Length: 305
Image (cartoon, rainbow, N blue to C red; front, side, top):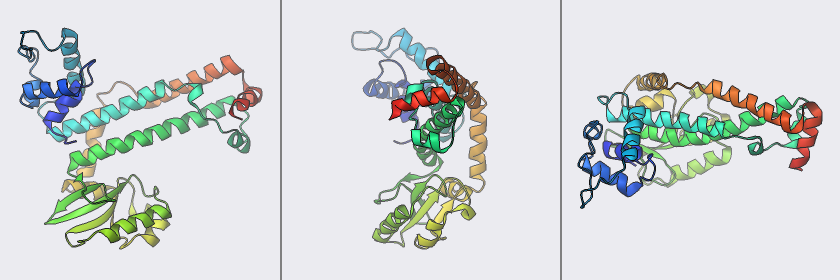
């Protein structure tokens, strides 16, 4: 997906009840794929009608579109890539909070062997450990999709070479990146697989294979990568170096972090508060169903064997 005005209109409209891809695209065309025209409230949909002169959208749908747009777009004058970054970050946080709120005791996959190995004898320890584990896994997965969008909004394009995710064109050369989140997310087998992809690149003068990591420092890169990756450390960009290179702007990474900070000041919910509230609710639910202490733990563990 291209992170342009047309697709932003489509993306926001599809959040409304009973508006699918075709209707959302028709709305974008109606407004000439212009965000400025789309956000020209309150009369913007006055002529969006079918052949019989009836509005294609209900009043409720139009109201939802206005509310959603106002929620996601606070300043319509900023560049479209910054608006998209705002939308992506807000959606990531909102999705994470919804995922958190929907978590129930039945969603926690409790490993009886680990409970015994760690010597948990307080039910609160068990709940806290597995609740945090579940939420962390969910957030890491969701963030992977979000960071892909952030990279695209910052200047990267999708790679057209197998084994690589993004490409950045500089000085008539294409830097082909396989993207990883952190310095410690690759096993030795993954590094060897990347080496295979690097060896398969036909024209390494025009297409320069790279490993990109979205945060961390080179000092934190694990030993498997350092000892095995072809042409290390020239074949790696990490953290600020990666983001600044993609954007073609020194200091861009700091600018992006500051932008995200400003975006989240608009959100009324603190994620840390939501986590603690849900943890306490799970504890109360456990106690009402199973009791407290080691006896309740032993009872619950029988369900997982």
